[in-house]
Amino acid sequence: MASNNITSESKQLATWYFTFAAIIFGAQLVFGLVAAIQFVMPSFLYGVLDFSIARIVHINALVVWMVFAMFGSVYWLLPDETGIETVGIKIGKLIYWVFVAAIVVVVLVYLLIQVGPADETTIWFITEGREYIEAPRWADFGIVVVALTFVANLFFTGMKGKQTGIVTVLMADMIAFSGLYLAGMFFTDNISVDQYWWWWVIHLWVEATWEVFVGSIAAYALITIIGAKRQVVEMWLWIEVAMLFGSGILGLGHHYFWIGTPEYWWEIGALFSALEPLPLVAMFIHVLYDWGKETGLQMAEEQEGHKIAGHTITNKPAFTWVVLNAFGNFLGAGIWGFFHTLPQVNLYTHGTQFTAAHGHLSFFGAYATILVGMMYLAVQGANGIKVLKHTKASIWSVSLITSGVVGMTVALTIAGYVQVLVSRAQLGATWAAYFDGQSGMWFAQAMDWRMIMGVVTLLGFVFLVKDLLTTGKNPVHVR
Ligand code: HEM
Ligand code: HEM
Ligand SMILES: [Fe+2]
Image (cartoon, rainbow, N blue to C red; front, side):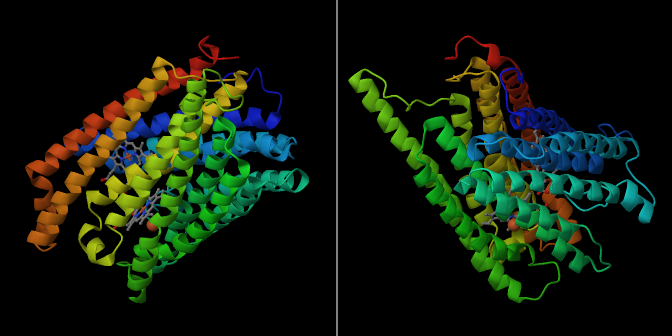
């Protein structure tokens, strides 16, 4: 991502964040593929790279690249929204390198050391062993410093510059986002209590603060790409924020069903998590509404044979990813989430591949898509392009990545179905039933398909990188 046309230091820092995010995204896919191959061929890399480590790197890389792209998105939009240069950007830049160095060290330790003794040294220097936030204790403190600096940059800039609705929502959201991380930093000896607080990080991140963040950048993206009316977009944003916090916070209950918490969580979890898809539907309507208005305008333009100024899609690839985000969020989080959220259903689906099906489609649909969209906005800005069009590579990448992830989701859903039916419903959830559920033909074939679709996804990613690196120089765009 060349940053030759960028005068704002905040935007320059954003391109650094996006670049590292893309690299880690690649690592995520490679390690996911290793884990998928190990499902099919358990001897693959035996003694070199354990499945558990490949899995850790896969999901931690996921979280980390998304956080990098999140910070990048904020640094990118801040100067546009506030009208000023980001406050404290020099410290922001320094912290970027601290963050990158910490991630590199953490990953090298995962790969080279892998396991340690069952005592405090492992927790401090190798891994804490908590899914998604496995980073060792020393890194926890590093992340707190990084997060605080980022929030300070955002906050002081927001206080000094213009406070649009988007900036105000982001300021509140990023404080919540960073604050929740603290809940995952202390240990208790009781595993139920430990899990209870751990979900404060995981669930409240993905189903509250991340969703609000996505609402904000979707609003920014729609204003920037199709000139959507700020008043309309920000009105939706506030509605979504209210709904998301309303349902997402108590929706937390859907993780408290079977971990030893009191039974009243069944009712709370069932009711509020079932309401969670509502704001996602609202977001969906929000994007389609703006999109519909836009297509309507374009048709009118074509009929009249001239362009109405200010109403072209100024960045086709970014727009494609934003529309995909609306669909993906609705399907992955809303539909695939709702499937298994009632305790009556979750009793059967809990801990099957069904969860992984939902995990893939939701993280991809709700977050990966829009972050890639933001990367395209940065490529456009960095190269001073007025209208960024699709190229062959951008079309290949979006098609292959989307079909790959959807393909994996379908495969995992089938695998989950077999587990629910055989292990749980027919054979009564015994230890032997657990293995029977995984030895049938349907399960095995689903795992093959997941691996194949993983390759498709990775191929799409190669096109994506090629496009992000080269499209800025392509003469097809309007300058
Ligand atoms: C973009 C938003 C969302 C993301 C990224 C997401 C992601 C995930 C992930 C990764 C897990 C697996 C956690 C683990 O490893 O144990 C999970 C579990 C779950 N999600 Fe979501 N989710 C989202 C939204 C939703 C929504 C809106 C619902 C309900 C309507 C939902 C319902 C559930 C349930 C019930 C589980 C527990 C599955 C089980 O272990 O039995 N999710 N989610
Ligand atoms: C090359 C493509 C990919 C492959 C082959 C792949 C494969 C895998 C495998 C094998 C696991 C471990 C599942 C288990 O423990 O049973 C996993 C977990 C996971 N992957 Fe992927 N993955 C890929 C891409 C992605 C993408 C694009 C995302 C999201 C943007 C993602 C998000 C996740 C999540 C959230 C989990 C944890 C799910 C859970 O515990 O419920 N993966 N993946
Ligand atoms: Fe949740």
